[in-house]
Image 1 (cartoon, helix red, strand yellow):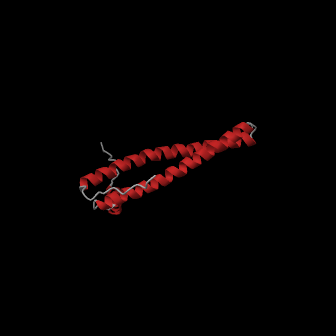
Image 2 (cartoon, rainbow, N blue to C red; image 1 turned 90 degrees about the vertical axis):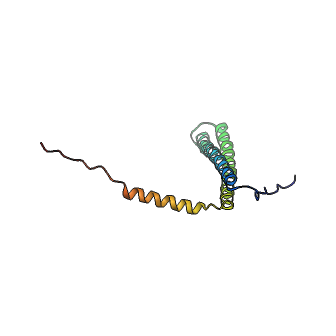
Length: 129
């Protein structure tokens, strides 16, 4: 099998690059859901294995638990590596579009801090009769 060639994005506009980054970000969110499911499978496998071997559930459940834990662990590892690579790819796409994610994060954090500082709690007014 031939290695994949890099996609030539020289002719892409900034709008095209941002759209591609958005599509990949959506895919990353879907992969994150699968990662949570794989981690859940890992934990369920550990619990079933513990119950099977230590709590009298039987050796068959112990073995089943180990199989589930191994499958969940492998799936979680593959998904985590894929998500990390995809995030780096999105950063590279946005960098090619001239957009700095780090600057956006800093601006968002600054905006949140300013909102917290200017947020006022409503004062209770007491009316006199």
